[in-house]
Amino acid sequence: MANRGNFSGRLGFIMAAAGSAVGLGNIWKFPYEAGQNGGAAFLLIYILLTFLLCYPIMLGEIAIGRKAASDAYGSYKQLGGKNWGYLGLYGILCGIMILSFYNVVAGWAFGYFLEISFGNLLDHPNYGTFFSEYVIDFWDNLIFSACFMAITAFIVLKGVQKGIEAASKIMMPALFSILILLIIYSLTLPNASAGISFYLLPDFSKINFQTVYSALGQAFFSLSLGMGALITYGSYVNKNQNILSSAATITVMDMSVAFLSGLLIFPLVFSQGQSPAEGPALVFVVLPGIFNSMGPIFGRVIGGGFFLLLCFAALTSTISLLEVPVAYFVDQKKWSRKSTTWLLAGIIFILGLPSMLSQGAVKMFSSLPFYQGRSALDFVSEVFSDISLPLGGCLMTIFIVRRWGTHNMSEELYQGNETYKNSLLEKYINFSIRYICPVILGIFSILIIIDKFYGVDKLMN
Image (cartoon, rainbow, N blue to C red):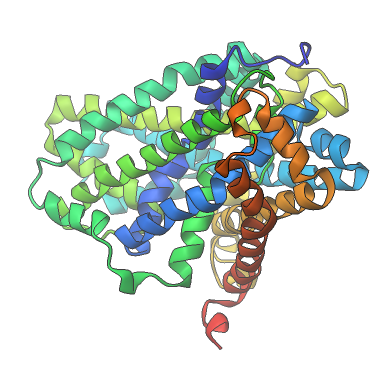
C-alpha cells in the first residue's frame, strides 16, 4: 500500500473524489440534459436516482477498492477470482473511451478561455455560428486537446498526493466560488424568473422514459460510477477513514455543483430568449452573451475566469479517468508510472480523433449510418457512458451479492464508522445492493440499448 501512495487524509480523498465527480458532466452536460428533458422534472428524477441508486453503488466501489488496495482489475480479481477481473477491465475500457471524447470537450473549454480572454469571441455577432465554426476547426481543436491531455498526464505522473490531491484541493474551492458569484449576477437579469420557474417548478407531464434514463446516465457519468474510478481512488484510502460520510459528502458536493450550474445557466438562457433545449452547445452559446453584456474588460475577466475554471473542473475529472488505466498497468504489469502515463495519454488522445472530427470536419465521423446518423462523439459518449456505466454498476452489485458478499462489504464499511453496524442505513444499503440496484439498473440497461440503437419508438411498440 505504501508503495502505491495514499491520500493524506479524509479531506484529500473527498476533494480528489469530488473532483473526479465534479467536472464537465456537471457544468456542461447537466444543464443541457435538463434543458432537453423538462427542466425541473429532470432535476427531480436526477436527485431521486442519485440517492436511491448512486450512493449505494459509490459505497460498494470504494469498499471494494479499499479492501483489495489495488486497481479495478486487481480488486475484482483478488476478491472474486480471475474471471471477475474482467469486470475491472470492462470498467477500465469505459474510462479510456470516456476520456477520449471528454478530452475533446475539455479542449473546447480551453479554447473558449483563450478566445474570450485574448481573442474576439465576445465581439462575434452570432455565438451559435461561432461555436459551429469553432468545433469544425480541426487544428485548433487538435492543439487545445493535446495541451489539455498533456496537463492531465503531468498531474497524474506526479502521483496521488503531490499530483491528484494537490490539484483538487486548489481547483474545487475556486470552482464553487466563481459559480456562486456568477449565479448572484445571473439572478439580477431581466426575465431570470422564467428560467427559475423552468428549472425549479416541475411539470410532471414532461416525465417519460427518456427523462428517467437521461437522469440515470447523467448521475452515473457525473459521479464517475461504473468505470473503476472510485475503486481505484478507494484503494488509496486509509482503513480508519469513514467511507459512509465521505461518500455522502462527495455525492452532495457533486449534486450541488450540478444544481448550481442549472441555477446559473437557465436564468441566462431565458434572459437572452434562447431555447433551453439547445443541446451540447448550450454553455458555449449562452454564456458568451452574458459576458459580453458585462463590458469589454469586465466581460473578458469574468468570462475568461469562468471558462478557465470550467477547464479546472474538467481537469479534476480527466486526471481520475487517466489514473484508472495507469493504476492497472502500474499494479498489474509493474510498469513505471512515468512511461505508463505518457504512453496511455498519447493512445487515448489518438482514440479521441474521430470524436474531434465528428462535428462537421469529416462527414464519415459526423453521421454514422449504423447509429441513426449520429456522430462519433455521440456514439462514444452514449455507448461508453449512458449504456456502459449503469451496466457496470449493475454488474458490480451482482459481484457483491453473488461473490464477495454484502456481509464483507458491511465489514469494510464498519471500519471508520462502528455506528453503521446493525443500523437502519446498513439494512437499506444491503437491501439496495441486493434488490433495488441490480433490478432497476439491469432493466434500464436493456431499455437504453434498445433506444440508442433502434429509437425510442421501438420501446413503445
